[in-house]
Image 1 (tube, rainbow, N blue to C red):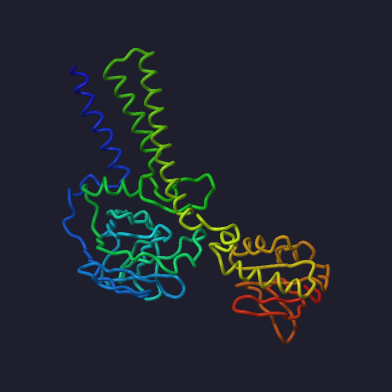
Image 2 (cartoon, rainbow, N blue to C red):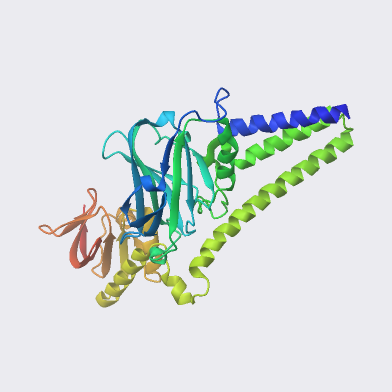
Length: 395
């Protein structure tokens, strides 16, 4: 009986030490922060979009024409190192939006952003000290909202249910922020990381040492060893206890990841459920790229082009453009020219550059990127899209 009574405080000590270490709270930190910078919704000014003040809340009703929202508050000589903990409460936040912290440092042009967990009608606490961008003097701070990158079609957020910015707060580290910090890190919703299709939940690169999996696994291991040693369990029973703890830990992590997966799936359902295949295909996260690909395909048909070479400064747009052009014979422009630099491109080759570093010189009729050039004839230009027809290549 005495051994069991001793085991209880030992287990408590193990988990308290692990939680405190994971949250990064200094041992000499106060229980509650002695000072903080508090902002109500009323303190934020709408920079992009439309909003109204209701009591002390800022209600966001609409975004700008590009589908972006931005609300900021001015600060006066605030050192980032002194206030590393951000706490905020935003209610009714649409699940198709991504939230980011936007702040201006010492100079006017030094604007930084940090992706934040999506608020789900509860308080969120984030340790900003783990981000290298959070340093120096902060002169302005706010929130930015936009369609989740590479996931949500911008057209789906043309209208949304209004959400409320209730309050935000910056404060030094304190013991009372340990559990809110870990709750936000472990259970706060984050969109797909795009690191892998098998990646569910935030990874080590995002959370650092507050990552749920190693903390839970280490805590379960230490708790099992403490129980076996203090209770002096026989070897067979100790092995059974450790196996039982390992199984429970595995199931707990699996349930957490499944819950995160279902949350992500609900976002996808809200976009595509109940729509035909044609409508789903049109709902692309990069709708502009789909339109550009349609223009290029139409021009290729009109010109009788048998091959299309494409380029874009963005690797994502570049690969998506080739994908959307299928089943056309589409290939990377630069790679094609590097592999066969001395071979003249046939005249039935179409070259499409979209938001690209390739520049066209009207005087010489050359399209180049500083290293490679090709003789071309302009065919079409609209916005960032330029389409040319090959007339040969020169080094």
